[in-house]
Length: 315
Image (cartoon, rainbow, N blue to C red; front, side, top):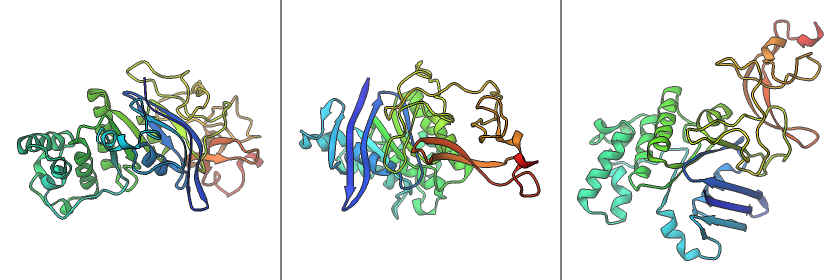
């Protein structure tokens, strides 16, 4: 069941149009990934879905309530959702006081605050730092403090805006494990934005690619990421969250640890799924690329050729 439905969402700041006719649905209990480069509109879309700011045009339904027609419902709806931003927001106070802040604003009973703060810190593995000054913690630990401050309010939907962009690999793995556990054990709905395609593939049940505030082409393209099969039985063959066609199946050469993309034209690759390394290319990352024909494809950024700096196809 969709708990968020957005249609024809547009957002502009002055003359700069940031979002163009975005359609999106979020299903209860899923992890939805929004993937795209910086400036593609991911953060703006999350703020609109979380009712932090309004769209200029379009329709938005949250928990079955028309948020455009019923602006008076925003506060109650926002209390059912939570947002974790890219840069952790912590205050010059103890970890306990940082996490308890939201509950104090809601005038929760002191006993409830104590219990929920301890439970939230235990969920992110920071119980031993409950009396520590939050600003003395590492960046990864501060991000977990900020996540605890969100979790302590028991959100039904958790929005994560590039939550690991500034973290080291160990802290990134910790945050990802926490998010996966919350989704699996608490059936929490999660919407995460990231520029990392592989992170989206690891975490999300469904992935939508954003580029320049637009949704990609509606027809299947080589290099589309396959959908991850979830424990609830969702997976390949379902509609893309940004109204895109189902992802293609993986390559036959699907050994663990390998990432496959279409080889460049003229390499002589069989089909569309051989690793680029077989043709002499090294690749360090891949992301959405807008081609000359206007189509959106996922491509590897080639970092060099085999040895002499020449195109391996010429040898």
